[in-house]
Image 1 (spheres, rainbow, N blue to C red):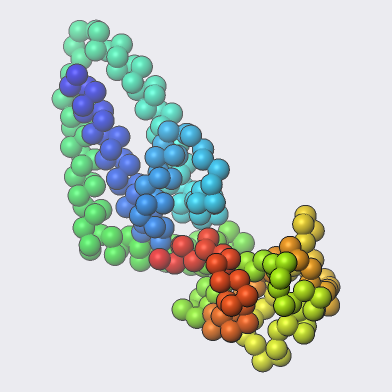
Image 2 (image 1 turned 60 degrees about the horizontal axis):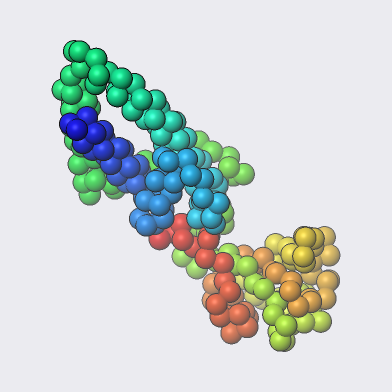
Length: 231
């Protein structure tokens, strides 16, 4: 019974430490906890939230540790059960490990350490990774006014039949990345293609200009995946 309690303490400590590290990379608390448990148990939920892990270099490293720790833990449980049945097994060794992890957890959860980890991870992202390895928010969302959005063209849209060269004023601080039409991504002729219902516009630029042109058109359809990481 003592082994089970100590082992649960160790697992919970690993989960909480990993959640703190995930949050230090800019991930939301609730998302961090769910994804940490998912990785630790190798359940592999294929949600949009999981892309926040797979698309981020530092979070991927934490995720790999959790996956390996989960697999290793299973082996430890089997081995420990066998040792419990053998003479000479001492819970004191596991108790020391559990206390060490709790001490680490208490340290990393202090405001000073949390601030340090966030700063350290941000510097690591700036120095250690190429642009193509970074998540969208770290490449495009450099200022508070920057915005990235998916804009579905609805069946009643006023923009149906118009070209994006007509929709976007010349002085608008917005860039059309591409138009997604079914399984086709229109890039080369994106500004000269007449819009159809069902098209999805991928836009990047100033949030104010986006609100002026598109917020009333599709008030609840903006992409939130890129903005979650900023919180």
